[in-house]
Image (cartoon, rainbow, N blue to C red; front, top):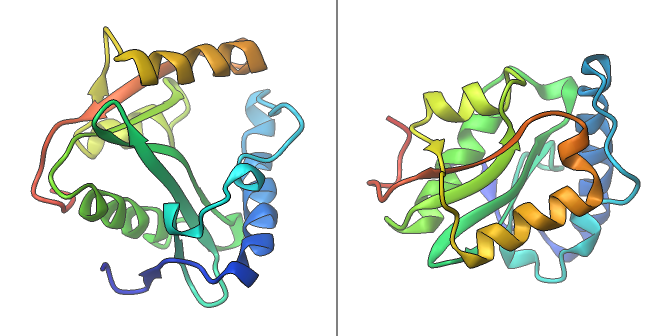
Length: 163
């Protein structure tokens, strides 16, 4: 496991909603206001989460989709941004993938989204598999595509670390 990154204790799950809410507010100056509800509140298995910090200041939520590890969300509290915590979490996600591809959906033009993932080796997916296509459809139905251009991305099999 990447140093400083771990699976959260069940008692820490409530802390992750506050991180998600604070991280979502960073998008507001760009005109992106997420629909009500928390992604993290839907997670029932803490083993699908990775956290950084004690207490947590960032998290990643990933699950198996179409034979890949799909990153549903990564969030770092803005008070702890630009300290490499997101990169540590991504490295832990890559490690967890065990060489399998990693997929995600994101905003194409938000600098800390599409371009950040591209620097980590992700490329846009032209034809998503059925599970990833279902996630894209859910995001569309929730109105996320009304907030900015959303894309699906993949990073092919890898050695488990950011290059």
